[in-house]
Length: 119
Image 1 (cartoon, rainbow, N blue to C red):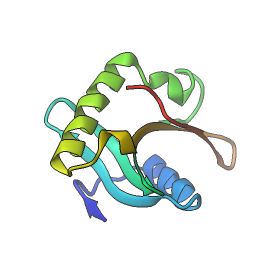
Image 2: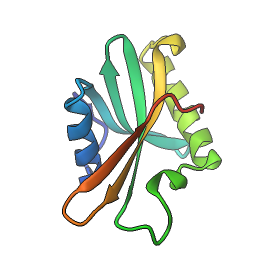
Image 3: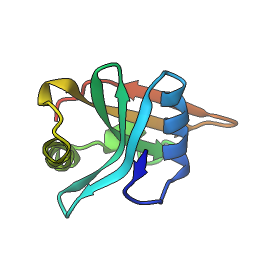
Image 4: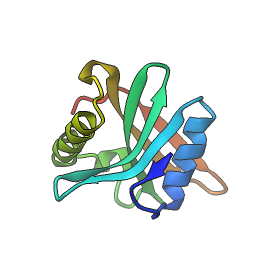
């Protein structure tokens, strides 16, 4: 596993733990492509490379965490994913983009995994 940066937030650690429990293998974190964007987590499961956007909310004051994944954010993620795939010689047919939404609850967290989001 290589880390582009060492800045991990609590929600990224929650997402990593959740995904590792589902047999995902961590490949990279916080991968940036200039000003174009950033992908929070890059993982592998079976024959797929999966790119993750992780969103977190302490409460519902500003809506659900997944509502922060806007079309603008998805366009930025797409450019970053494309760059990562070209740089690492990854077949576009063998990738997926997912969103992990984490909502803090009283004594725990609710994790929702949205698979195969169109970017």
